[in-house]
Image 1 (cartoon, rainbow, N blue to C red):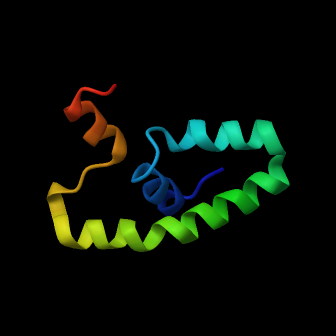
Image 2: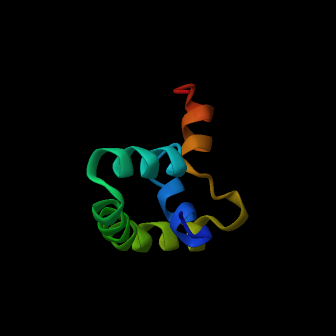
Length: 72
């Protein structure tokens, strides 16, 4: 299960954080998935935090950005 923060960070880089985690869990098992999750969030958190700080209320998740670009 993803925490709210993990979900928010992942939402900056993947369209569906829950689907991403379900896929990783199915592919690698729950223990490895937890390690992958922690590593991915650790790598992505600085960019997420910077984007939130720079964009404020205009911040958009990857899904929102993709929808605006017509990619979904």
